[in-house]
Image (cartoon, rainbow, N blue to C red):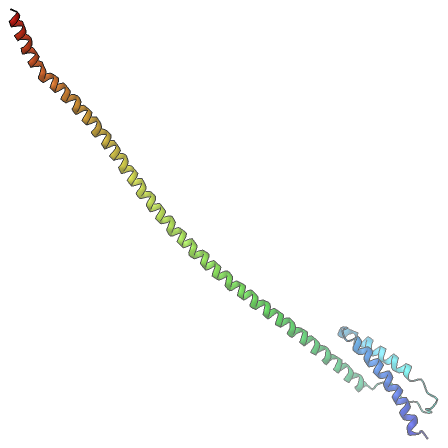
Length: 190
């Protein structure tokens, strides 16, 4: 007959070994889902090592976990990984959303700058148009001033011609007087 103390003692040892195996599974958690079979083999080996009979126990207690226990461990491990992956995914989504917001802000700023550039280009075109109009006016004024200069030169030449003609007229007017004076002198001498 097995005493209660004898049964409890191996259970404590087995529990400690199972906790060690479970902690090794938790340490290996970052591995991929394909490595679960390897983890299960490691757990099985650890459990087999824990099945060595003790001096206080005369009956052997099966230390291999049941299929349900293994399935529960696998399910829990899958949940833990899914939760971890979901947290990573949420963190990535949050970072992407922040980056997207930053990009949208920059795009808004670029649109504003583009509108300012277009406004400045339109203003520049307006100034170019005004400059062209003023250049045309200046060319017109220059052409008119050239005509005025030519007119002034023509007037100056005309005035010179008039002075020359007046001088010639005065000389011609003096000619008859000189002729009479010359005749008078000639008559006196006679």
